[in-house]
Length: 81
Image 1: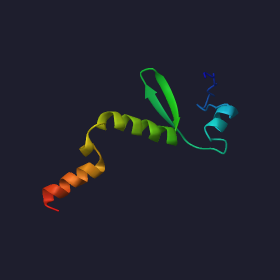
Image 2: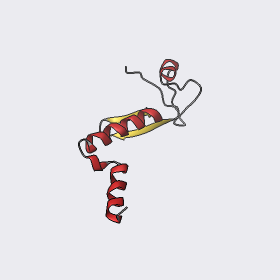
Image 3: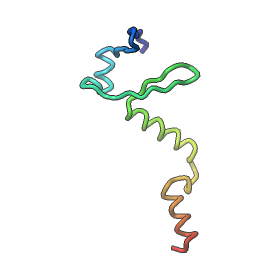
Image 4: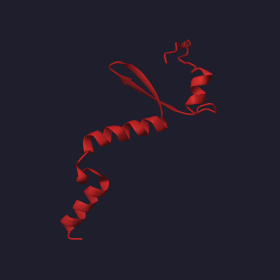
């Protein structure tokens, strides 16, 4: 879905009510703004966490020691625990 919004002279913009409702922002909330080569991406905090988790899985897939738990296990072994 593409929606045109207007930016006011003081830099504010409003998201349409139906979008805020779908994102759970009807009572207010926070969005994270990411500038990319393709433009600007707005994500809720929950969407940003899910996006980061997806990226992390891409880089750690098949690497058992890529997790924090794996790292700590290696350190414990190094320390003889």
